[in-house]
Image (cartoon, rainbow over the protein chains, first blue to last red):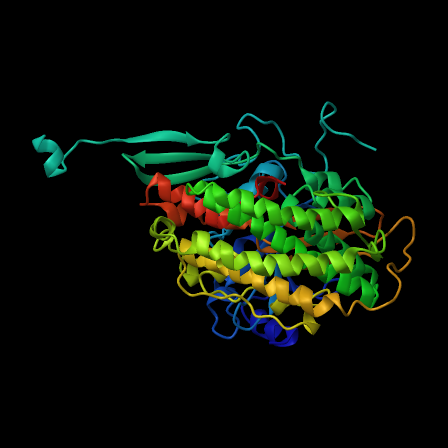
Length: 153
Length: 372
């Protein structure tokens, strides 16, 4: 399905979505945090879309906001969409987990929690996956400083 | 004695650490097993023993430097990993490499795949108690390493691809040596089949073990030979062709069974397909430049770029978020091993510890690829 047709379907679900194709090969949609789970569920379950394969889940620090980027593909139709979600709370960021929709998200969300400190609601096993449990701070955030272990050029 | 025959021995669950120094993990993978007797109740991976935070380092490095970090991830697919970053940068710069580069990259990628699968084959046999396979596999893998060494000077961390082309031209011996290798490997692979594939013990330990359904494979983001062993059409070389894969004929190895043995057969079939791809190209390497000049300091335009390639383990994705400077703002490697690992708990529950070793062997984990 072409990007415009996908956009048409997704647009009708909510009026708080922002679409963009600028500077990206995929159709990007920014979703408000409170609607994330619902939109994702629809993306997977709508028969014309069937985004059943979450091939990349990226945590990102945009400076003022923290966010997660979901790259989705349909294994049947081979079309793609990128879902973005942001949270402005840097102290205790919380987003809904999508691990019940795509099981692979369970591990990827643990990784995002480990490096960006975003907590995922309804995650079955949110723990430090790579770093030790007593590690302080979240290393992939832009404001993380570790004078001992980091080489800054 | 009566208790034993009635099978009423009182058991209780307990924890056991498998790794981080376990010979069957081939690296520093630590699995926290909850077991009851020998039955696995839960597998909880604990990672980070070889985590180097490559993604954070990338935010500091130039794009040429990033290529060098990638073969420290999945060191058995180093050419293919290099290619992923090079392709992403070329896509962002809208740089079209020459035909010669495309064909040479395809040949190198496929030789890498054969080398990686050979090592996996040897190790899989070894994990299941057939040590002989290890020596045979290394004999053939050695030939590929020698071919690589002659052209790019390295045997493991190649750094042969650069954004825009290749570091050096082919060594004059390259074509002849590859042809000789193809003759040898075509003779050896049927021997390997006779040695291991038909072995009764091997089949009993792999058939029907670690069943993975097609739906689960997609939902868990499993890719590569593991997913194709469950019948998922996911070969990036077919679904999103890159390099010169759109001009060669090959078949995607697909088997529907979804057990450990079918993952084994997929990889064997893939070796034959890779041989066929190299055969189609080795006599037809076009003349031309080996690199398209790029600026000494590469700056990508503002935007987001995604490139995926098929490594020997599955789909490797590179996501670059650029703000227009000489470093990426955020770079994410979607590594095949990490996603494949997430399904391990699901499919090994209820099995025995010995089965877990067989399942892990069929997944072909490379731990630095999982940890990054």
